[in-house]
Image (cartoon, rainbow, N blue to C red; front, side, top):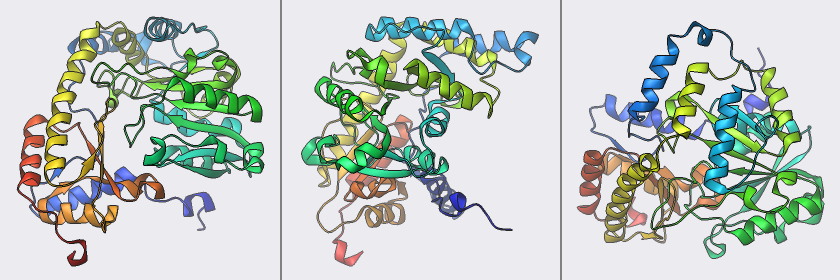
Amino acid sequence: MKLASRVEELPPYLFVEISRKIAAKKQAGADVISFGIGDPDIPTPKHILDEISNTTNDPQNHRYPETEGLPELRKSIAKWYKNRFDVTLNYENEILPLIGAKEGIGHFPLCYIDPGDIALIPDPAYPVYAIGTLFAGGTSHLMPLTEDNNWLPDLGQIPNEIAKKATMLWINYPNNPTGALGNIDFFKEAISFAKKNDIIVCHDAAYSEVTFDNYVAPSILEQPDALYHCVEFHSLSKTYNMTGWRIGMAVGNSHAVDALMRVKSNLDSGIPQAIQYAAIEALGSPPSVVENNNKIYLNRRDKMLHTLRKIGLEVVTPKAGLYVWAKLPNGWTSAAFTAVLLDELDIVVTPGTGYGKSGEGFIRLSLTTPDNRIDQGLKRLSEWQIPNPANS
C-alpha cells in the first residue's frame, strides 16, 4: 500500500530518535545521562494534583468536553494575561485552550495554509512549525537565525516575492533552542511586517515564565495593534511542570482563534475537564511556585555553564528558557560531537542541526535533569578532554 507523500517526506521526529538512542544504550548496560529533552523533572505542584484528583470524581467530567474549553478556564487565562502582561483579552472569542501548545502549533497551519502557500519559519527552530506547514500542503521558507544577529530573523532579507506569498510568520522568544530573547523593537518590526504583507504572526511564548537574572519576558500582545495581526501560543507545561497533563492555549486575533477552534472541533474532543480545572488552579498559583522552579533551574544553569566553559566550549549565559546553547570548537559538526559524547561519556545532548541547518556547530543541553544526575554528567564532562575532531 502506498503511503501519502506527506508521510513519506516526513523526517523522524527529533526527540523520538533521541529516546531510541537512549534506550539502545541502556539495553547495552550503559548508565546514560540525558541532557536531551526539555521535560521538567520537577513534580507538578501538590495543589494542582489535588484539584485533578478532586474533579476526576465528578461524573460531569467523565463526558466529552467542549472544544472551546470551559468558560471558567478561558476567564482564568484572561485574568492571568491581564495580571502578567497587562493585556486585555475577551474570553469569549480571543482565547482557545489547547491539548498542549504543540497540538495547537501543529494544527494552526491548517487555518492559513493552502497547498503552495508559504510559511516563514526560523532556522534553527522547534520542528513542529515546519511539520505543521508540511501537513497543510505548504512550503517553509527558512529565515536563518545567526549569532551575529542575536538569533533574531532578519525580516528585511526576506525577498519581496516570498513575503507576498507568505501567509504566516513564526517566531519564538524566549527562544528554543538558542535561549535568545525577543525585544520590543523586534516585536514591533514583526507586526509592521505582518501589516505590510497581510500575514498572521504566530508567537510561541512557551518559555516566557522560565527566566533568570531579573529578566522579565514580554508578550507580543503588549504591542499596539497586536490583536489585529498576532496569535500567541502558551503552555502550562514548562511554567507549572504539567507536560504530562497536556494543557496550553492560543490567544490573540479573534479570527485566528475561531479558525483554530473550527479545525480542532473536527479533529479532537477537547481537553478533559478535570485537567481544565487543574489548569484554573495552576493559573491562580502564588508567584512562589514559578520562582521556586526557576531557582532550581538557575542553579543548574550556572553549574552547567562553568563546566562547559572549563572544557573549552563557548556559551552565552541564557537569561530565559530551559536550555544552554553551546558553540563547538572549530572542526566539529553538531552530529559528530553529539556522537562522541554518547560513545565516550554516555551523555546525550541534542545536535543543533536537529533544529535546522543554521544550528550547525552548536549543541543544546537541557536543564530538566535531576540535580544528582546533572552533577554526575558534569563530573564526566569536567574530567574529559575534547578530542581532535580529525581523530573522531
